[in-house]
Length: 525
Ligand SMILES: *[C@@H]1O[C@H](CO)[C@@H](O)[C@H](O)[C@H]1NC(C)=O
Ligand SMILES: *[C@@H]1O[C@H](CO)[C@@H](O)[C@H](O)[C@H]1NC(C)=O
Ligand SMILES: *[C@@H]1O[C@H](CO)[C@@H](O)[C@H](O)[C@H]1NC(C)=O
Ligand SMILES: *[C@@H]1O[C@H](CO)[C@@H](O)[C@H](O)[C@H]1NC(C)=O
Ligand SMILES: *[C@@H]1O[C@H](CO)[C@@H](O)[C@H](O)[C@H]1NC(C)=O
Ligand SMILES: *[C@@H]1O[C@H](CO)[C@@H](O)[C@H](O)[C@H]1NC(C)=O
Ligand SMILES: *[C@@H]1O[C@H](CO)[C@@H](O)[C@H](O)[C@H]1NC(C)=O
Image (tube, rainbow, N blue to C red; front, side, top):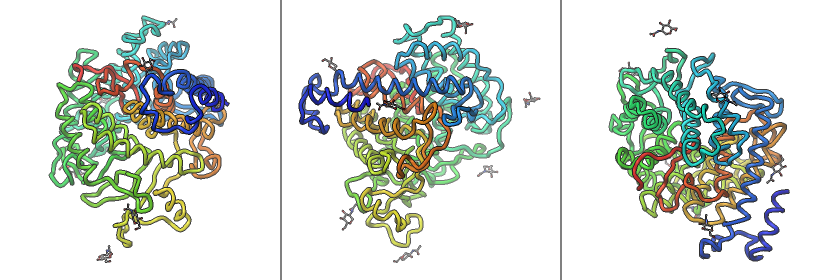
């Protein structure tokens, strides 16, 4: 319904030649581009309406539990029962400026008992969702959106809660090396693992450093940076197959990597993401993080960039095991285009922006090639030089040959669990180029998600993105639907603001890996 209401007047207003969006819009002066004005506002309002619908379902049937089961109108607590969806929704409700929801969450956060839980605590998940959600809300409500701080008494308590949570988590770093354990049993136990992973060690430093900067207590940042130091100086040399690209698992006792396999994929992803984001956060303190990002990015362009045999126009990043390539990627990895674009803007290096746009284009194809218009969880391809007997890189099975011939990838895990990364990269592509095409891609993805996943009182996971109607549902709505899918879907159509990614690379805010924006600490770039 919104679809036609939005499109018809706009086409009429501008020119019929715009009915099919063309990159040629770029040639128009910025203020004349059709992306700027009513069209954006109507789309932004449609995303807001979807957010409110999901929130209302969660609030009615699940709050203050972690997540809604929209079909059975029940709930679960996969994130320790501290109200994950509410805390993850906080910064989105704030940027959407929906006062009643902001007020509900603002009044709720001081009541969370972060001292107690009956299940295992993930240091990583707790940091990127709860800690970051609170710090972001605090930044906004003490900064540019302080007008939304309906309860002034509650605002300082948000930071107190972040500190309390970090104090409860801090024993994770109490290992022989200072590299944290990830899986914690409160109040002082761990699951006994002797290693931790690249992403789960390397995606804490932004949040913990920001907590230090806000509280004036340097301890938090020091803990996370100590753990990260082993990733910035990887040992042994064999764990770094190409400069900047490293293995995945690190021994908590020795600080040594125990393998050499990885990529820009789940388990490794946000380590690379945060290298450049730390530089955005503070270019003075974190210049060496930038240097490591550049090494990893240049090695990725030189060694991991890969073109499927049937679609030479597509560029994906391969995974690696040592210097052997594995032609497999996934929805999670589709943040990579956005991350290259962000770096291209802040480093003023067009080659990173261009490479990022190529990655975004290929991830867009994973969406438009399926029956639902939504991309799969995991996919593979082969190249013209892949040996027929390469067991790491099998070709498509007979039933996917035709799909592979056309799409340039074949599906090995067909679910969609409400992940945001493709929308996230569309957002960066739009912010960098101003090209209306990326807004249309994001809008079409949003419409596909809105029409396929919306069921019962919220949004549910799909079993098969390449089956009519998504092949059925899994009755679960993860908290990142609120934090990420809704936020990127909205911000790409929202007005310019200080927290939006800046197309000159002069960012005043930086988004954590769960899309919670933080005010940057360092001098402008
Ligand atoms: C999103 O889906 C809801 C139904 O769940 C529908 O009412 C609404 O119009 C849809 N939004 C758009 C923009 O299509
Ligand atoms: C939209 O247009 C106005 C002037 O018409 C301009 O000030 C503003 O920067 C434009 N915003 C974007 C995102 O292009
Ligand atoms: C405002 O926040 C304080 C501190 O959390 C709380 O005690 C009080 O009940 C809140 N006020 C309202 C009207 O909810
Ligand atoms: C861990 O916590 C338990 C329960 O509070 C307590 O009995 C025990 O002494 C603590 N152990 C350490 C090493 O702090
Ligand atoms: C980690 O290092 C310790 C000490 O050298 C060793 O005993 C342990 O087996 C190592 N663990 C792994 C998984 O490599
Ligand atoms: C692979 O070979 C086919 C047939 O020669 C060719 O059309 C295609 O462009 C090649 N793909 C790549 C990625 O070079
Ligand atoms: C694959 O085939 C090539 C020759 O075509 C051979 O040299 C190589 O050893 C084979 N590799 C495996 C793993 O069988």
